[in-house]
Length: 276
Image 1 (spheres, helix red, strand yellow):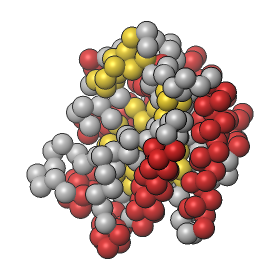
Image 2: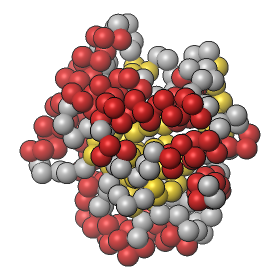
Image 3: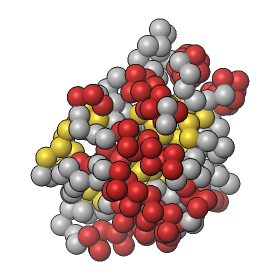
Image 4: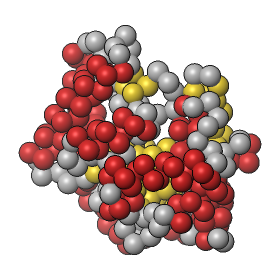
């Protein structure tokens, strides 16, 4: 990536005829550069149509990412659910790749009754299976466990760094709002953003800073972490200092806005970023 690209988590709200092609065109017309394909309920793009999506994205100069199903738990006590979870990640990755996608992110699952260490080992085992399956089919796309917003979820910042070192082809999707919520209000100062990116670079190298997949939004939280996403102005999310820190670290890649107002906050962040 040559720069940090701003985009929406799904089709922009202002799209008049909300389908994928019109959404991509609207992203471009808004002055944004990226859009996340939301496969959270199902992979709604079929293999036969993926090439057309790729063509539209290339023509509009919009970079695509994808979010795999919400129905994933790689630490389930039921083998059938683990198998289905792996299949959902693989299917999202395959279609995103055929659409010309840059990376696909997912929520790894829950600790359940396991210790954090036991859950991580299961996570590592199953994601290795996913990556080997994609490699066998020559699917070349970054697979990214997302930093999660609840303390009950696998996906702490440290776990996402560790899995990225342990498994080839994996990098984190850093959701800064989730990091803020998971710690019940921490990770929201310029110093803390600096510390996060320093750890990221130390663990994964400078090239990882130039190849990021970031999520951002306002967020509501409590002792157990994330409650729901908010519009930035209705939250305490310190997005201006985050933009400043991303610029100081010369981060490149894609930053996807997941606020309820999607493109408005994406444009707000882009304006803040380029005004510094």
